Image 1: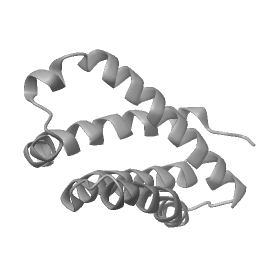
Image 2: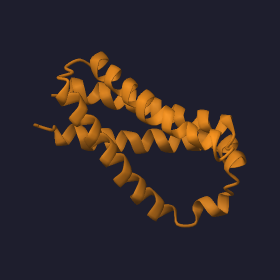
Image 3: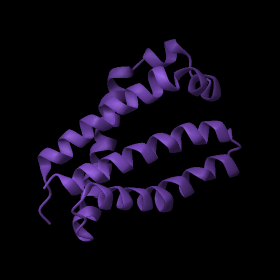
Image 4: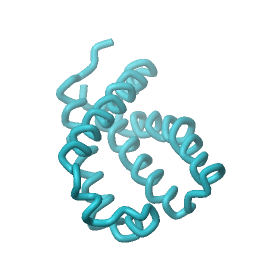
Length: 131
């Protein structure tokens, strides 16, 4: 498989930027209330957390790129479709375990799974379109 590493890197950086907005100005207050994370706790070790998240995002984008290449998605919309099915089959369903068994709030699930949906749609589209 010929992975476009520049597209992977750019998409991973985008993952981080959207995540900073999603869990910052967009949903920071409800996310913190639902998780019990305080501002002090969030700031403690933030550098390490962002470094680890970059690695996690990079792995996700590489695997998504492999799916996009495997099914030969070539347009933004085709990439979004791949991102959607991966989200539905491997993110939305698995993350529901936290609601079902750990009794986590459904609103927290929606915040987290919403971020994953947005990022898989965008990432899939970019990876399919950027050849």
